[in-house]
Amino acid sequence: MPRARLIFALFIILLSVTALLTRAPTAPAQSPAGAPQGPPPKRGGELILSMFEDADRLDPTFGGTAGGREIFFNMCEPLYDLSADGTIVPRLAAELPRFSSDGLTVTILLRRNVRFNDGTPMDAQAVKITLDRYRTLPGSRRASELSAVTDVSVVDPRTVRLTLSRPLAPLLATLSDRAGMVMSSTQLQKLADNFADNPVCVGPFSFVERVIGDRIVLERSKYYYDANNVYLDRVIFKPIPDENVRFLNLRSGDLHIVDRLAASDILAVQRDPKFTLLTVTSNGYVPISINIANVAGIGQTPGRIDSPMTDLQLREAFELALDRDRINRFVFGAKQLPACNPIAPVNAYYPKDLTCPGRNIARAKELVGRSGAPTPVTVELTVPNTPVMVRMGELIQSMVRDAGFNIALRPIEAATGLAANTAGRFQMSVTPWSGRVDPDGNLYAFHHSKGSDNYGNAQDPEIDALLDKQRVETNFEARKKLIAEVIAKIQARRNVIYLYHQNLFAAYSTRVVGFQMFADGMPRLKSAGFAAGR
Image: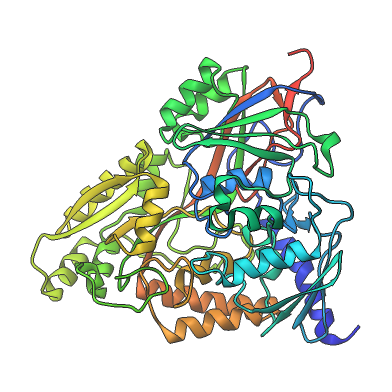
């Protein structure tokens, strides 16, 4: 095997090992997050589960919320996917991709006899149409993820060939998420920009209806290639941002599954024999994004905005006024992992030598004074409109007041907040991210000048160069060093201030079996159902 091709093969193995490492739990669980538990499900039934936030557009091209991902992973399968043990495996693809010796050509073989949920065939032409849409459609959030792909060609009905401008180390992980989800060409031609109104993909469940703010309904697909292993007739996702209401609905029987359980409710679930607790150490994190130059939307020309936080001294002062450990204790019952970077400690790429700045009010006040800004420094902070996020915002508000900041807190619904951040209508915003198994998925889109989630429109040629370089580096140690360099520069720029990594807790009725949630934090319902005789 030529040396370059061997390197790429070894990288795929390494990526799978990395994915496995990200699953190590840090809190006890009554049910593992992997394989289905309990007796085999009976056929039929309607399952109701919560969504901790509502979805945005149900089109993988534009999707940017974790709520949307919860829906997609149950009706829009990707080419590759995480398995129960955390490794990346083929899903709509028949095997792992084959790389050319120079790493610039990637060949993907597709499963046989796969149909979309409208009954039309899922073939290489459909994959090409979808990937070209992701790459080229204005406003696509997948464009920066696939920026190295210069051409998608059809070799035969089951084979797609990608041509790259440069080797792309995170490609496999990229195609295991929204950028690898294949949409029905027939439905795209029919609905075009309105695809989200009635999305059609390949999946165990197909879209039925959406009532914004109330429910998203899916039903068992009669066209799914593995339909015999799908048990439920119908699934109803209920967006319930308030974690207290979610838990009350679980206890009353109005919900079968709570997708995100508050730390304060963990003990009650553990003590109640009617429920099962599931714990997942995820790749997700919660940061504060700061608008530095986004005046007209992500990807547009940077400009001058009316915000004191464009001053680096004030951004540093703001961070030095924070106490991450206190936030974790008082808001999350010490169940989360305080952090100042986007790579989870369980990930093989985590920079172990990284240190986070502690709270230093004296230094923060000094920086505020040196900035020359009128005090108190007034700035708006938007937070997701949930009780726990509002509590965190209020604690941050109190902390930074000691350094001379006056925070105006504005709770906002997830999809509305995403639209506002994208358009640049914010000063500071808490922007949770559900995380990706490859570090590129937690870095590039948020920090590259052309990144599709660079909310603050931060620009830095040195950071761009490092982000581009780590994408083509296939040697693990060399890539890890590059990623550490990127993180150090991001910490110095402070366009994003990271707060903590997420441990996720879900709870469900013991009537439910086969429910799965992996390191990506997404509930998977293909194998779920109700226990026989219950």
